[in-house]
Amino acid sequence: MILTKRFFLFFIILLFTFQKSFSENTDLYKKIDLFGEVLEKISKEYVDEVDQSKSMDSAINGLLQSLDPYSAYMTPESFEGMQTETSGEFGGLGIEVGMEAGVVKVISPIDNTPASKAGLKAGDYIVKINNTQVQGKTLMQAVDLMRGPVGSSIEITVRRRGVKKALIFNITREVIQVQSVKSELIDNNIGYIRLTSFNENSSEQIKDKINELNKKKDLKGYILDLRNNPGGLLSQAIKISDFFLENGEIVSTRSRQASENRKWFAKKGDLTNGKTLIILINYGSASASEIVAGALKDHKRAIILGENSYGKGSVQSIIPLKNRGAIRLTIAKYYLPSGKSISEVGVTPDIEVAEGSDDFKFNSETDNQLNFAIKLFNG
Image (cartoon, rainbow, N blue to C red; front, side, top):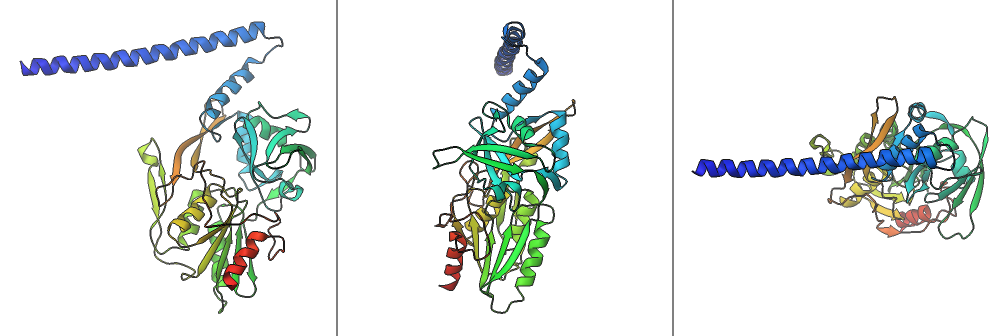
């Protein structure tokens, strides 16, 4: 009797699960039919003739961008272009861009590139490229508009927080060669290291600079400048964080896939022997920059100075498709040792200091943040 009741209960649960699954699938099929109907209506009745292939590309991209600002569809042409650019030398403007509320937003201009020299800033909204309105276009479409032959010019119109009128920049495309690490000895006793991106060689270059500066007997400490650094390789963020830590968690990722749930820890050995460390960040500090700043802040290993960072705390994977295109899909989120997510929040500085200049030159009189950091060392 008990066995019969259990079997009956199992049958009811199985039936309910099947009905729920059937209902969900039926709703999905109805939506697919509806999409086909809308596409047919557009094809027959829209005022202008529509390329259905491009419409489908837009629909796919719209689906991905409804998830978050960083997921996107790449056509075969866009995917090929992206693979060319990741080689480390390419023709372009030198800006990292993303989407926010359907508008193309500058995450960060890269140092000494046409974009940074022209005066583009992190947080600028690109509203027009040459004579083409950008609003309503996908991120990849906007990126395609910005591409062009080296030496050719482009006019970019942006909206900036706190500025009433639109700003127009005329920029000449150049071959972009990213040199990620620069260093200087300030006042003969402060090691200044500027990191502009996290590429394959960044950690080795940082290590070399630290070892070189460590030879200075009267060295008080270090300033690590991560302003306008849009990020890069997670592996490099972990290695660079590890240089300043003796132990403890650096970062973790959480995902729906168990294989993507990971934690990374520091190994014993602080390369700077516990010397004072000040990290400079601003709104253009994103992704890997936020991992380094956030981890060292949580471990109370560094003083974070500047402005709140960008808030890009997610992991994207490039997934190739059958048509030789690809999708960039967010597969996980970063979490700091404190358990807090960086995503859409960023890292808050311990000492908030507004920018005075975007030049980021050693000892620049107009660089409020750098000068404030130097004053902290000098009491």
